[in-house]
Length: 141
Image 1 (cartoon, rainbow, N blue to C red):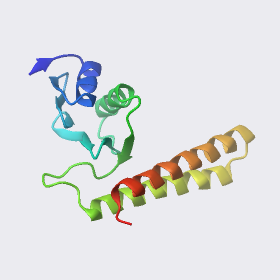
Image 2: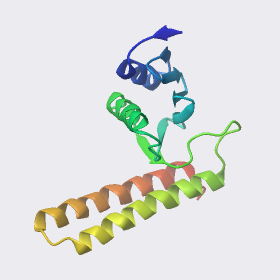
Image 3: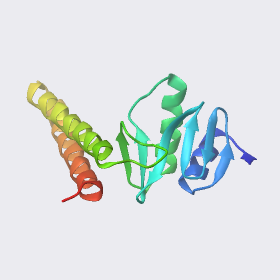
Image 4: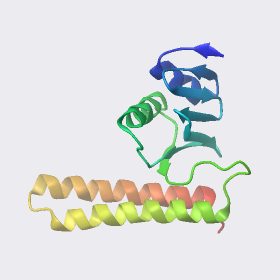
């Protein structure tokens, strides 16, 4: 397996390649921070864990996000199982994304400054669209 720095390892993951970075390991379809799977390729998109675990793992996630420009990424709680994600995992992920949109909406309603309200209104739209897209891709009609 090739060795590289963490940004190179994240890029290798996005391209389904194997590489070892500094406590970041790409196995092609999954990438681990230390010994925890933090992202997977699934159904043509990348599922990135919503959990941060540590400051280092937050940086590893940032490397993946930067390397995956142009690739759809969903930051969700359920990203990997040996036998694949099931309908319940996808439902939990969708509910998480929907709750994130609801949280943004509540923040937009409480905002006092116009620029803050505008930010949270835009964030509400973005998060709502993300939840809708996830539902379309992974949940049965």
